[in-house]
Length: 604
Image 1 (cartoon, one colour):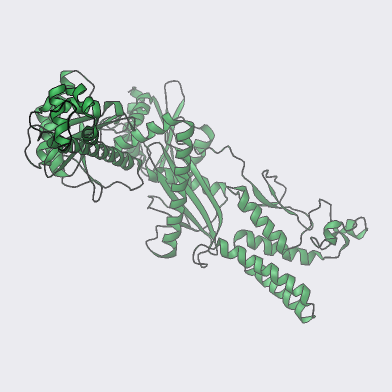
Image 2: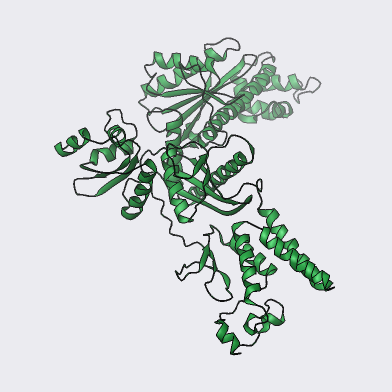
């Protein structure tokens, strides 16, 4: 550490602020915010710092700059702006190269309403952005079906209309427009429709509903029932649109909602904008992790970035967990029950579904990256010193202690390596004793790998609970391997993960990739062991029947099976075939045993 940096660390302020790390070439490495600058910055230079990538970054720090601000929220805003401006290498980047659609209400007389991907600062109103085009189109189609708006690009300034320059077009004749170009519709009536449309876009349907009800009643009072029916159909369309977009209590109004999920390499944040119980905006972003950022740090940055992106001024924000900062004039709420809790859960579900979709895409396009992510996740969740690139799983198979076998299956990079599967016939155990069988098999397996100088696995998975795991640990201790290889047990009933010398099991998320791989290893070990156990039991039953034939020993039985494969074919084999396999004497004995009423051709 250079003397200047060392001096800076000793004189840091305890106020809220933003810190910036630079390398010796003046390159900005990282921008961070802190409620207490001194405590936060010094934590990076702790000798027990966890995280490989964080240690790499700290090793490059040559210079430090800080900026004091009034509050932690101000620090978060400044941090967000600096990250967007300078894009430091070790910060999470919420870059979004997509151009999302907006709904524009044009700043003009008799405003047009249309969808656009370009914002022009001419006083027009823009609503969005919409993460997907389809919801924007559905909204536009609904609005256009209810209100008859102009679609032409004529300059409908009052003086030009008064000059009589324009004539109604086909849109007027097919009743898609009410002809403002010839003053067949007043500006006051048109602007009233635009106000109602603003409400629909924002999720407030009351003004639009009142407008249509008044129009329908006016037609009915004038006995224009056909027109009244047409307005009623538009009112039904509005209510249908509203019902499809109302997801919570309609009293939940002007609220921002955030949901989040994350793994070792990325976080996924979903955002809902709620107006009158309707989701009027939905947006999900993937945030790549650069160093070991916490979920709280990422959500804080995403919250500020997304609210700025959507120009949100909501004074209530619903969150999945607490954040240690405040936004002036805004309530940050973590709901525990009720509709607000359900909408946060829906947001989290959207984030999780988005993550699954992205992971499936990665699995197809970049399988190596998919594997690396899973290995990193397993290493963290299973508290391993290294990634489990080589996993071996063990299971015992026996029925009341008969024909016991133990299977060993091997997974490499999360996939089965069937050429490396092994079956062990238990030798030293009498009767049904899973614990002793596991102890014998583990010892035999790893003694042989050590003797042959073969690579050892990073993870051993035992099918069973504490008892089987303890038996495996005994053998690993005898071989001097305990502590060098991670060994765990998995109990099937609740899918508990047991660690040696730890009485409290680990429960993994049912959708976790780590749990899925462990289950697959366990199930494959069970399948492979059961298959061989059944084969051995079947062969044992068949051989016991042949062993009853006087004068026929084990070698003759093995010879028969090597040629005829099954007891049925042995029973049905002609005398000539049996004599060809065993010779004239023994072949005749076997044939006579299964054909007691038969006669040899030579009279014997």
